[in-house]
Length: 105
Image 1 (tube, helix red, strand yellow):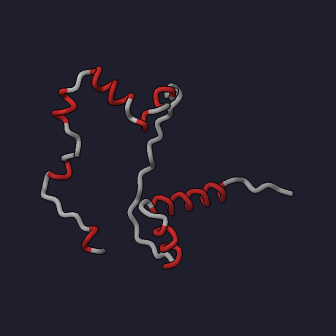
Image 2: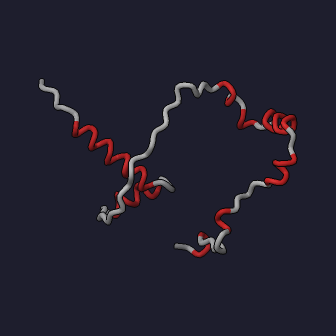
């Protein structure tokens, strides 16, 4: 791992976010609505219908040690963070396809 990617923190620092809570607490509802109206990322959010949203609880993970070909691991790592999650998704897809009943011709 390269030193420029290593971040050192003191105990308890990880619980601190970058949110200025004092500024937020001082805002009125009108101030918040104005900030939302000026935020380009908010456009269209108010139109989302959440009434049919379904909560999906992820399955429990098990830590294991596994040997993977170097080129396979490099392929998934090239895609960036979350490579283990993507590898799990590929394995899950294979498992689900293999579990389906075979169609007879």
